[in-house]
Length: 517
Image (cartoon, rainbow, N blue to C red; front, top):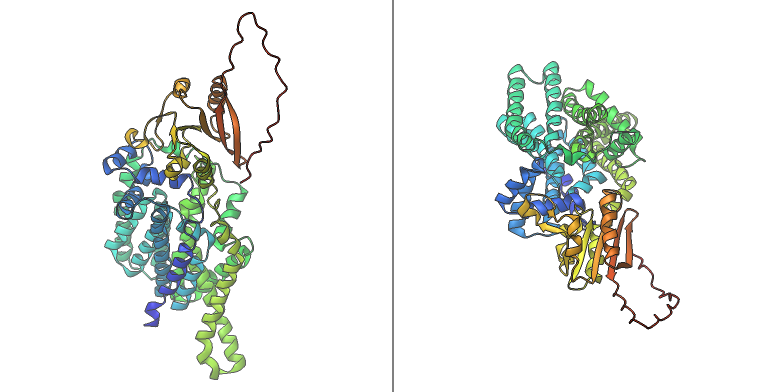
């Protein structure tokens, strides 16, 4: 019974970390895209995927059902990811427990649960936590020879994220190694390969065909550099403080697994999953179109967790042998509880060393976007009837993520709402119509993101000045993002003919300062 309950422990640890301050960090722009897409009707969602974001269409469908059942809120947006992360920790432990032993499984599950990057995507309304769950579920089915369920899990992973196909490449390498080790026969290898091929045809191919011509949404990705590798190593090990010891333990576990059959099977499953997806994607991004982003191969962290579990178990096994030789076999009964406690403490050391990362991702800016602060600024200072401009206009993320904060404002350049136009952010009036759109508005909020489309932004600001709008107050949310309130200056009356215009007095300093946030 205790062995069957073993996967529950890491699942509960992951769930607690996932639910802890689940909405502490504000939503960021990718989550705003999820809100914009999943909140539509099913025909509108289908229409949108013909133009943009087809690769996330299946995930948007899942969140659409979630919103229909529980309403639209940051909690309901992120809760499915938290639950998926908890299930991943438990299934990860169960897989390692089946291929190696229960202690290695428990330690692997606990290690994965305390990684800050795992918590980061357990608290995000995107598909990456679900993809990790599907990949681990496919690995578990692979170990149980459940070919039908393997097809289902792999197909769902491929449909949620096309790049999860790289995990199937890693599994193919695993099958070849298992065949060489004698752990899998020809029939099992053929059945597994067939299941994964069917999964690609059923899951990945329809999404790829639906999303043809939509690769321009990835133009923001830059080429890998030396920081790419260090960031990957820190994500897999928890922090820069633990990179060397954790990777050393993982390498030791992989090395010692060569001498034990069961551990060899787990190492053959873990090592390709840890190495191949990120290396293949980084390699392609260096010679072709840049496509590597850590979250796209988040499931590779599972392979590292399995190797760390193997390494800790191997170290504890060696320590137990030394202790028995020194103290005699009369205390051998204490080996298991002492070893389990020591392994848990080792994982706790990793958790403590990476704790700053855990707290950082739960700050209001933990997801690196000030959408919450921006929306709160508009909510606190806006008046009914105010206008709002997003510069560039596609940066409507704050209004999409927190629509209630903009209820007193009118988007001046929005012509067709996103749901009707089949786009993520709506269709706009041409900038030449801005002068007409400003009629009747004395106050206009400008949410300005520096950098993209500078000519368009400058032209819009010039039009505001020509219409006698001046900046009344501004908030610097980040170095690149600014919130400004523009107010219209009353037109001065023209002097009557034959009378001299009154002398203009020197401007008076009002003492107004920009509020600090």
